[in-house]
Image (cartoon, rainbow, N blue to C red):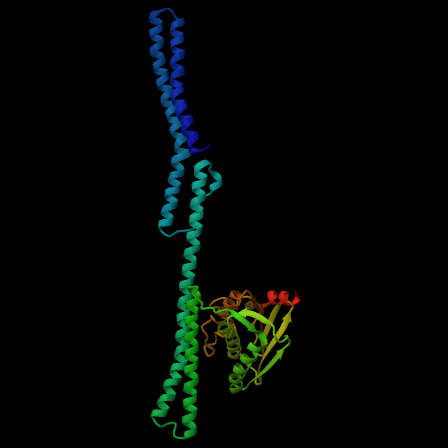
Length: 364
């Protein structure tokens, strides 16, 4: 019974009971003609009515207390738990009815949202601490190298032109690594604020990847890594994409592959495949591979497989999460396949762009 019905029943009962008793008493007075007996009866009736009213008030008070104030106290206690930060104290809405069921449900909805929000905040804080720790570690390594090689040049350790050139080349490579780390951190901040600067346009996939392979190929050649490139797409295949961000995807995937290569002859393969109404890109390496238990989690922020926890590898742990975000923002999807000891292949798919209007005009 809801609160309104309880109050109405209580009011009607409190009003009608004495009226009914009084009418009954008056009726009996008129029936009994003896004045002395009538007076005695009226006095007895008043005492009886008073006792009944007291008993009824006690019953109604208990009834209202159990049906109203008890639930109010439960809500107050629950809100005290919320105020103290305990979001595990729940109220069972199914054991109450009426307005209190709605109140209990509202409390539960609020509790669950606050709990989720708090857990997410704690998780984000832990992830941010881990990010700072990872970035700090990754920055220290190239900075230490730059400092050491610069001191070597200043102190005259690099006493030949060949040594000086090697030292300067190393310093240059380490500054590039620093630049990459800072760009990654800046991009991560953009993802968190949903402010990724996309500039979508029509891209010829073949032309775009030819340029990418030329650029990536030079870097891989300097690292003595063999690059193979296979294109099974027709020239003129188009997609709608941001060339800068899509290039970031390729660089991040290949950069991640380079970190965990353990073979004497290192190799990376890039393949462009036709998937009917989509373009499928595969980037495969012959590195350490990823354990099956880790494979489903590698695109999560800050996730690192056991193999990649080696401090010599570094990495902020957000590279592949950035890749996933960019691909999904392009309307595509990404996944990975891997065999431990043999290598890993990253697959991503982006829908083709068909110039339907132009085709329709030509057909007419």
